[in-house]
Image (cartoon, rainbow, N blue to C red; front, side, top):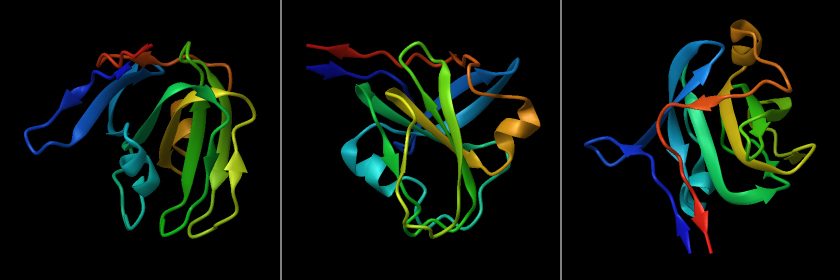
Length: 137
């Protein structure tokens, strides 16, 4: 059994607040298989400080590609202790699969250059302001 807790807006969309380098950012959430498959597809423009957090129920190797995704992105793979284990760049419409360099429980997609602009690197830890709690049985 898996329990997820995160905030939902009045329109039913899910958001999570994450503290990164001392500042709080709000990201969309993809916690279901369907939401993870769609991700940021078909988005043509995104505010510079937003993105999407993909949530998985356990640590595993994660695989991503950019089918139908029109904006250049950076992706951070994050372990169950909220430590960034890998950051990679992804090109618009590139269907080449990229794999996390280790097992991750979360992936955070943001506009290209976001992590560099806010001073985030592999090994840094994030802090969830909005509770994102799992119970797997």
